[in-house]
Image (cartoon, rainbow, N blue to C red):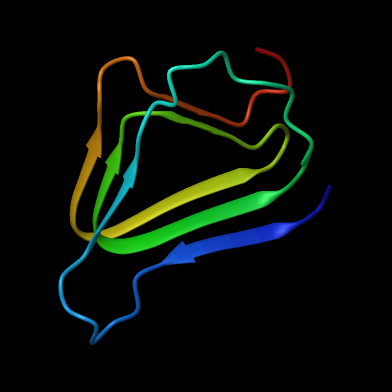
Length: 79
């Protein structure tokens, strides 16, 4: 709760891509309400589930940002 998470490919380490892929399983209960999730990379491919109930999600791509069909990016308190 009220946590701050950062996934980043550092500048100068070459072009990079962060991929969020589906796990093939039903998502469980989220235990980090009101959290902040930041993802920073040249390219971001979101094809899975990112949830931060009542929090923030930032996807910061300097190149491309792809939100795939069926992916879930949500800060909703339910669902």
